[in-house]
Length: 264
Ligand code: PEP
Ligand code: MN
Image (cartoon, rainbow, N blue to C red):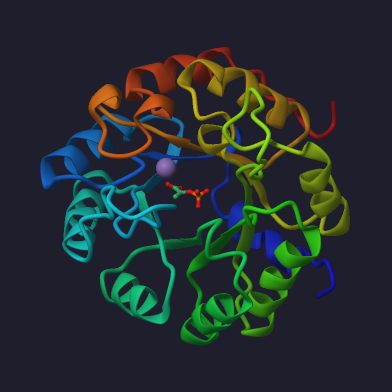
């Protein structure tokens, strides 16, 4: 897969002065929760609303997502707010349901990104789509595996592509939930300079008090966007409670973040 400007065109369509901002809860929980958060995020820097409805949990027993009913709530949120909708897909059936419900952006999570069979199945289901498809880095720090997933999508004639840097698992404890290993994302950026690169400070840090700092680091490195988990009642979120911020906090953070223009 060669680098090419075609990869960038979808991002340019947003006519952004700021980085692309994707925000919304880790998980859709109830219809009211989805609608409230989406309504608080409209008329802000946010262009795309995110919510997971199929949640890949490392261990069984946790909240595994509301399932397909959440797609209906997102359709309603889209009609009410005009925000584009994004959700995670992990297999061909998820892809089919998300497309049937007019989801605009589909992302592939870090646990799926490690599995070439799963990515190929998703790529086949998406063949030729004009949806925006974002591939998170695999949980293990393996640039080739990340690029391999990207190539599978590109070879399926998907051109509105982007990657999300969400950090990498380590057995040793660090101050991060997932160690950023910035160099891997920089290598990806150098290899495909026209491929939109989005930072996920929520899953990198695992803590809301570090989101600002890591977002600023990403902007200083000219990332194209940020995906930030945002909830009306973060402490009581059904997943990833410690890292979610309120819509108000998100808006305040964007007043303070300094965006470096490419020409600086
Ligand atoms: C998520 O975005 O909520 C998620 C499960 O992310 P990741 O695949 O990066 O762990
Ligand atoms: Mn999450």
